[in-house]
Length: 289
Length: 158
Image (cartoon, rainbow over all chains, first blue to last red; front, top):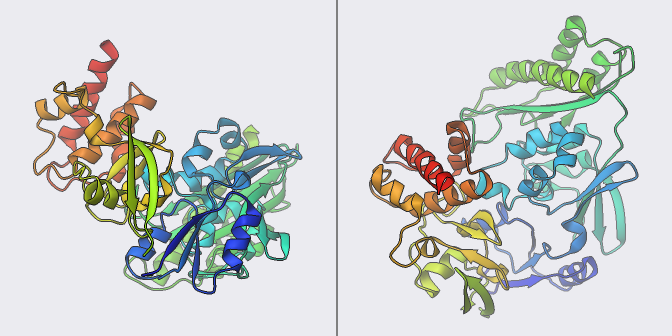
């Protein structure tokens, strides 16, 4: 790091070129709330920092094909200040609002939260529940990747060298859809999830669940999309019996670590509790939408 | 290490400085520009003592690189008082004795000022949530919250 260089890229092609030309360790800088901490605690020793914040595609929030697209480096605060996006995806925003403090959210982005690849990242479970796709740009051009396939383990992503997450697309929402994210933390603010659960539901006109996604955070090495838990809700009116079945599937899917912040037993128990509560919030939102 | 030349605006003044790519905005403010009102607490974005605004957004200056701030507008605690005239928040912090050791105070003032710009009439809950990223180990926060609420009231009636 003694020879660290800082470069700000203006375009995606420029960023890719800068990264490709560097033989040493390269870090992509968006909000910097993880990269700078890791750099100054000597966890990483990059030779080159490529700042992508000035690239228009990574900073834009827009409606697209009936859904939404937002840049990977859009700070959480900009999403929070975007009333239409907040109304469209309240569960995604449940996660974004829980990240850090006001100061952190002024810089930190959903793209950074994803690429930092913490299993406890708060915006990742609701983005997976939303079926969000990441647009990834790299030396071989662009590709679309489901968000659940980006982070593969603590601090590890599936991105190839030189690849950057540019933006996220969220699909159009059918009528009667709702999503929610809840986490457990010892403090209400400025804390890291011990367990997080995101639920995204769609109901038909009769109130029967036609689509569901249930995603768990901080109970495995990466966020878990639990199909069995979703299947327990689909085809039901999301009544108490269906929710009880869903809770069992959620707990069965948990494979958490045991540490000072939560034992395996505690995390598994709480995952079920949060799954029930998040489902009820998502249900209420779906009925109102 | 090759130094980076940056031109930017701090508290309305045009400023030029040279910094190393590893230096944070906090390092630049304190060590290069000798503006020591902004404090370092944790250096990891947890305590808020280094709060400044960057193009109007409240940030931790320890989590911003000096090299990133070219052609931006930065506001620090040094820009808060108008000459000898204290900002209402500063006066209310004194009136309510909302500080003891004072290390957190510049960050709390900068953060509170931003809150009142966005929300001139915050509830106690809104004040507490907004200031959750500013740690104070002396006061227990009660007097800080009271000072901010009192300043808000005075600024609304001004």
